[in-house]
Length: 238
Image 1 (cartoon, one colour):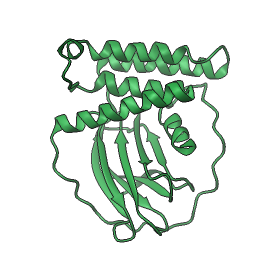
Image 2 (cartoon, helix red, strand yellow):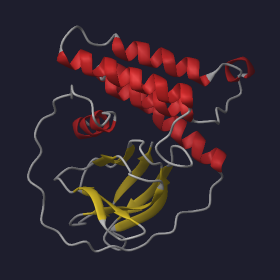
Image 3 (cartoon, one colour):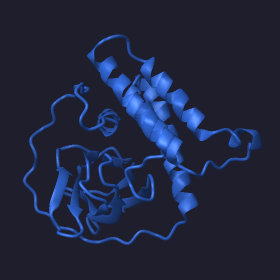
Image 4 (tube, one colour):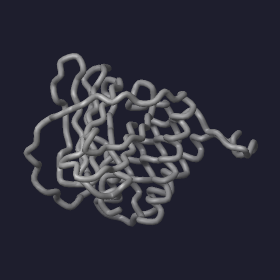
């Protein structure tokens, strides 16, 4: 779970901030090939995708509170504040503005740390998130997305295409729920096939973030390195 926490921590960081949160150094990148095989996800409704995003967000909230990780709370607040579907049986609860819940999470995130460099960075992250939530900004054109799939020896690669918005931080995380093995991420521009960014560190999870220079489609390639056994992965975007 430590690696998952570190991945979620880095997912929450906004590009361009002067004060960054320090993380332990990773091992050197592995030398690997780019063997890829397309996988077609099952058809699901937009509402179902929103529900999955919200479930992931509330998992982040539990993680952030338990591990005192304000960055996890900020990431959760972004998802909750920009996801349109908030299902439930409690009518009174459903009538509440999800942005209010998101703002409370941002306040809680800022209260987890005392004074210091990291606290200042969290303060800046929270303010950026608050502005994005107020304006309804998302990295992906269709908002936060989630896919669940299995990687194994027979199917070591999963591919998905999604459009990200010009000038807005794009983030992708591969959360290896099996907590073993080595999952990698590579992002390509669909128009040119050029590699944009990658995470091929020796880790069971993977994450990447970048700022698109224009609104365009990107190909997300999630692969299992040295697939001796299968793993279950949840792929999330902001």
